Amino acid sequence: MNVEVTAIEVDIRRLVLTGVDGPVDGTLAAEVGERLGRLVADRGLPAAGTPTTGPPTGGDLPTVLAETIWIRLGPSAVGR
Image (cartoon, rainbow, N blue to C red; front, side):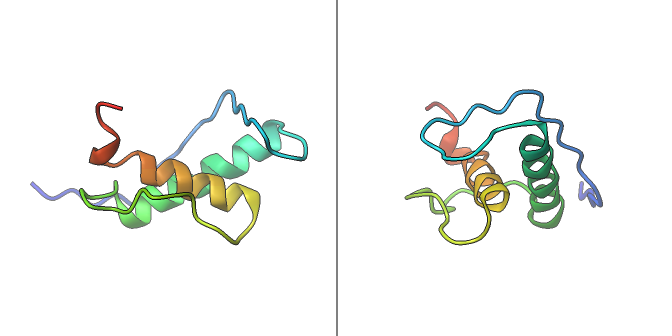
């Protein structure tokens, strides 16, 4: 069965970052959630074989965090 997803809502209630300069507040969590929801809606969940060698570089902090979380949602993350 194929299901088309047009929107995903991600609600991050608590975002904890270690080693990141700058404030971590509700605004950052909301921005990460928005970008992560957009990634899942646009790309689905990462397939097996999606590179997990390191976080993406470049872009703003919410985008980099969302990309990093998205990568870790893939099947290779199961069992870690």
